[in-house]
Amino acid sequence: MNAKQQISALIDTKKEQFIAAADQIWGTPETRFATTESVKPFLEILEKEGFSIEKGVANMEHSFVATYGSGNPVIGVLAEYDALGNLSQVADLGEQKAEIEGGNGHGCGHNLLGTGALAGAIGVKDLMKQEQLTGTIKLFGCPAEESGYGKAFMARDGVFDCLDVALSWHPMDTSMAWGLSSLAVYQIYYNFKGISAHAAAAPEQGRSALDAAELMNIGVQFLREHIIDEGRVHYAFMDAGGESANVVQPTSSLYYFIRAPKLEQAEEIYKRVNKIAEGAALMTETELEIVFDSACANYLPNQAVTTAMYENFKEFGNLNLTKEDQEYSQRYYDSLNEATKANLITRARQSNPTASEEEIERLGTMPVLDQISPLVFSEATSGSTDVGDVSWVCPTAQVLVGCEPQGTPPHSWQWVANGKSSVAHKGLLAAGKTIATTAYDLLTNPELVAQAKAEHQATVGGEKYQSAIPAEVMPK
Image 1 (cartoon, rainbow, N blue to C red):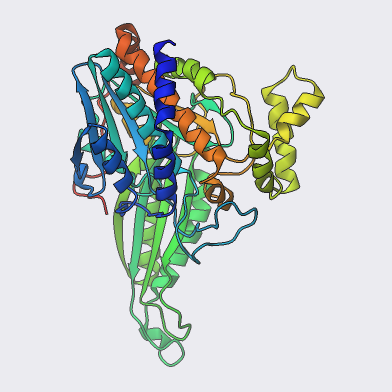
Image 2: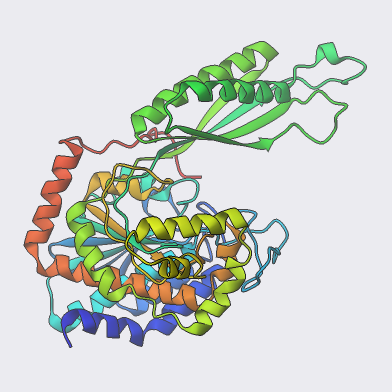
């Protein structure tokens, strides 16, 4: 048995504690920085496993850095454990049904993500102990990836500056090493304050904050035509001024996400949105407060480390799905509409251009996809993640593990329902083994680390990482 096979076996011997932790976190879904219960399984296991733990880094109560070993290289592993609001869902059910009406749910699989990272850190730690390897493993507990961007605050405070390389992963409905970029994001609150009045008896005495918010949204709708094609602007009403239509609404609040391929492009759109908000306040004679919430950078995949990670993924990323796993997941595939099912056939054909129609049909209709896609590096962007900020600080690589039902999107009830299944558990273990074996490569191959760092310097062009979050803004 070689060293990497030993790592895989070591993770398997402790798999029950990782699975139990994932299920425990699934059962206590918490959002943003308020991950009081979700962080507890990590701290308990890491203390038992001999890691030294620093809690509350970067002004976040429920963040941590757990360290094992000493000396170089210093390898970081990124763990997330936050959930999403209003995505409560009964586990294992093939239809949408909230466990708690309006409650939270793990619709992006972070209960798996964090514990898979934990498995990876402990797996490589156990081999380091056996072989007395020099080097340092750091597991970072990072709240608020979904909204708030804990890693961006950590990066701003220099928490990742000690790293030579960082590794991560994410659940997905297809398996691949991540060679794409992601969109940078600004998150901002626009709070309008007006004057209440009787809407029928004295409307002229009122100044409607709700009118201001609606005018702002209309202005942004017109702006969409005049920003770059890749730009994205989303909003939610946080306060619509109350429930009485007979009162001129004195308050209203909007929460905006502004996305673009690069931070400077998001900044440009942000400034234009601010002007629209100011114009809406001027038109309605209301007061405007702009509150910067957070931001994260675009992701820079490091090709050297991603390629090494991909090779390990091909060996250790097979979920070894059973007939029972596929039968279980059929309920989620059956919940898809016909257009989505047709798109899965198209995706299978594009990914397997030489395959027979019979094979394409099989791949396109599998409840859980059982293949790892070829490694492709591209400047294309998809989604957003605060792993982007880490990737500007040091070489970073991650894989996507296809342990979610094929065709279902992140932030869906299907992902929440699937979160405690055998398929999900197999995904976190595959991720842990891939992370641990890649960390082993970095610990034992100084040339790979040097190559990764040289590539990183060339990619950032000598630019030093600068956070887009203003210094006075704190996690909240």
